[in-house]
Length: 338
Image 1 (cartoon, rainbow, N blue to C red):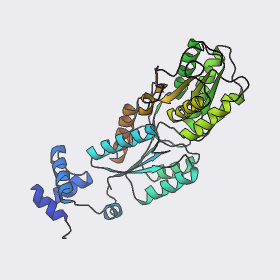
Image 2 (image 1 turned 120 degrees about the horizontal axis):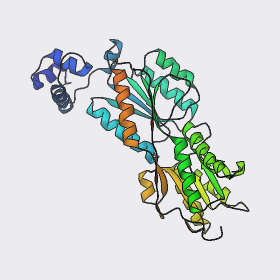
Image 3 (image 1 turned 30 degrees about the vertical axis):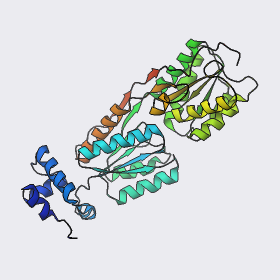
Image 4 (image 1 turned 90 degrees about the vertical axis):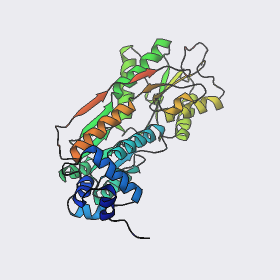
C-alpha cells in the first residue's frame, strides 16, 4: 500500500503544500476552519507527519505528556479523558503515564517525554525530585501542575484548595455530632493529601478536639489498601464513629471494611471521601464526598500549557479552585454506640 505524503494531503484539501505544513506546525495565517479541514483530510488519508523530523528541525511535534498517579483511579482517568478530548480538538496527541506516585517512575517518564520532544507536560502526580522539573523548565519545556504543586519549580499550577476541603469534611462531621474521628490518608509525600489532613485537623483543633497520631493511617491509593487501613482503625478499643478518607478510592475500601465487620454505615460509622468521582454515586450507601471542579481545572491547566507551547510565556500563575461538600448517604448522626 502506497504511503500517504504531504502532497496527497494538499491535493485532497485543495491547498498548497506550504499551507499544509503551516497547519501542522501552527505557523502562517491558516484559519481555524481551514486547519480543521486539513486535519480531517490527514485523518481520512491516515497521513502521519514525521514527529522526529519536526523535532530535529525545532518545530512543534503536537504531542503532550500527562503524568498521573494511576489511570485506574476514576478521578485521574476523568482528567486523562478530558485532556485527550481538549488535545484532539487542538490537533495534539497525548502520552499518558501512570506513575503510582513512585519517584523512579516519574523520573523515567519525564526523561522519556523529553526524548520524545513533547511540546509540554501536564503533571498531576506527587513527586519529590523537583530538580528534574527545574531542568526541563530550563530547557524551555512548558510544564503545568494540575491538582498538585511543587515549591521547587516555577511552573503554572491549577489545583483545588485541599486545606479548605479538609475543613469542610471535618465541619460536616462535627455538625452531625461526631467527636471520635479518624483519617485514612495517602502517602504523606503527596501534597494534596498533606493539605487535606492538615485542614481536617485544623477544623477539629478549633473546636478543641485532638486527633491522636494513631487515628491517622497512611496507605497506598487503592481500594484494597483503603480497606486494610480502615480495618486497622475499626479494630481499636475505642473505634471512631467517623472516618475521613482523602480520596474516594480509599473511602470505598473503608465501606468494604465496615460491611465485612458488620458495622452499619451511617448508623454506626460515617465515612466521607474526597474527589466526587463517578464511583461515589454507585456505592451502597452512596458516598458523601468533597467535590473538586475537575473539568474547570483541566480546561484552565490545558489552556496555560498550550499558551506556553505556542511561545506565549506568561507570568507563572497559581490558580486555586474552591471545593464543595456533596452530602449523600454515607454520613449521619452517631445515633448508635460505635
